[in-house]
Amino acid sequence: KAGVTQTPRYLIKTRGQQVTLSCSPISGHRSVSWYQQTPGQGLQFLFEYFSETQRNKGNFPGRFSGRQFSNSRSEMNVSTLELGDSALYLCASNLLTGGLTDTQYFGPGTRLTVL
Amino acid sequence: SQQGEEDPQALSIQEGENATMNCSYKTSINNLQWYRQNSGRGLVHLILIRSNEREKHSGRLRVTLDTSKKSSSLLITASRAADTASYFCATPQNNQGGKLIFGQGTELSVKP
Image (tube, rainbow over all chains, first blue to last red; front, top):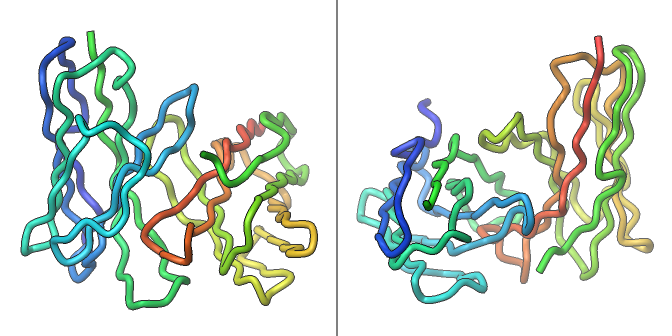
């Protein structure tokens, strides 16, 4: 079974631009979560989508948004990029059968650099 | 906000030695999970321990959980150079499995 895939793997943008990152979950997984990882703040939860609906949201400004499609693929968008948005963005998929013991499977991440 | 605090922040050992990492958390949990991350790449799930379990083994990994102290430890026995990575503990917040709260991580270096 193919793992979680994220595209692109690396991205360089300039301040003020916007960016869209894509995540394809493991086949059959309906939950997709996004995390931001920086050296200063560590791993922080951005949001989670399940069946095309946002179920959870972290403490990030409205510039960060996401969506999920009917095939469970998800995208996240960051508008008006700031230098502090430079980070590794990780996507994770989860079978989410309803049990809290469901494991999250992470993709390789997208390394975003904002200049 | 971070749920877990991990210590040590960095650990350097020789191959063959055991490595122990600790994690403390703040709120009640349903389960606690440990993940490994190799140098800026994705996270790999290692092991999950439920709140009603005290110890769990998986290969060279041993995890303990003390809910009275709100702490967990990860022991890697007979470490190898390939174990060099960052290790994170994580707990699902608000009893929702899709939202994990991570600790700051322990950076483990295993020297051959």
